[in-house]
Length: 461
Image (tube, rainbow, N blue to C red; front, top):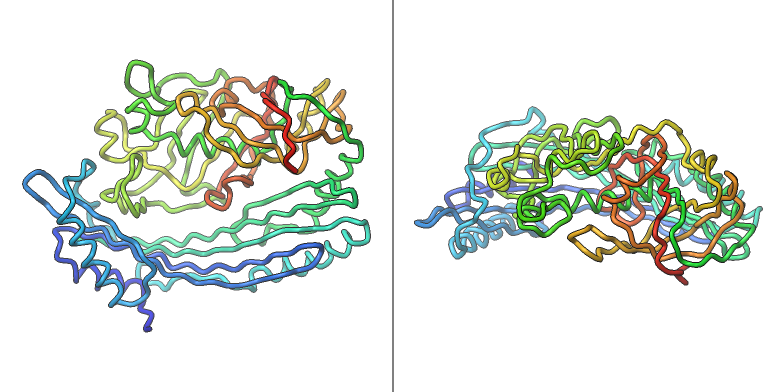
């Protein structure tokens, strides 16, 4: 079947629609990956995908109805079928509460450019360095397991209002697990835009160092421990907080950002520390789309906002909740500025040390984690989360890392942690082990939390 240019799919789709309004979104992506186990490369591959989303709107006597449909499509005939279905669905739908005029005409200078792509070549330097790391691990009785992926997605958004926007989003990640002869394990991970900053030998050195910490094994009971959370674990927790920070859900009293008795907690102080949590499409190294791309409407996303320009938004500043994720519709309800979700998250709490382990210097007895895993929500009202530690929980005694301990299940709220932490490192690009393949552009500090709740001992390994 013929593969048409994405711009042609947009234009032919808009022309074909008989609805009152139409938006066509084309996402062209290419992905390269590399997998290894037991110190040997096992698989690699490249995949390409073209997905089209059509949003149709129909004005009726009681309001404007909308319907959005998505499918894999690369030819004009496929898009026309999708448009017909979306038009019919919109005519059968009731009024959309988030209905609003489409974003006015804007044409990006790069609109006519072809999609960017990736290829397996982007991973070749990594593969070469992994060969050296495998040899070093083999000689030391260690085994390495891991996965690396690079993706480039070019998004085209066109509407019947004349909007024509294009964005190229590169991204990738690597995760490596090391095991020694006694089956002790450690994990390291990193997000990247192009793998030019990934040092496979450096990652292996970190694994070797952490496995060295585990030569002594200590069993501990559940309880509250003075705990150092590295940037990856802080990202694990705060990404979830960001995802649940929808203004509409807070206004409806469904989240931890709802004010008792009604309204949102915007303007309320969440921490006495200089906590700043923000998103910025132009953040160096963490760049993301500068405009809204909404494939479907939800409580914190509106198809009517497609193409809306994004800029730096402070969610928390100086410890005060300043904004929640919201659409033009929810902004009217909350009487707050329009602050749509953005594809990155940066957290700064004023820390200065560059290594999370440096926070252990003043610790009499506590724990150093490496990452969290299998995080689930326990209570939306308090944002209480539960999850497991994995691949490295270390004992700190008198400022020194003296051994590894068993895994735990934890129960904590990330909002509470921002109010309770006693020390922090400088922020650095991080990679959430739990959510990083969905949301990989984060910069977070390490936090020292004096009474982190390890609610039970876990047998997970």
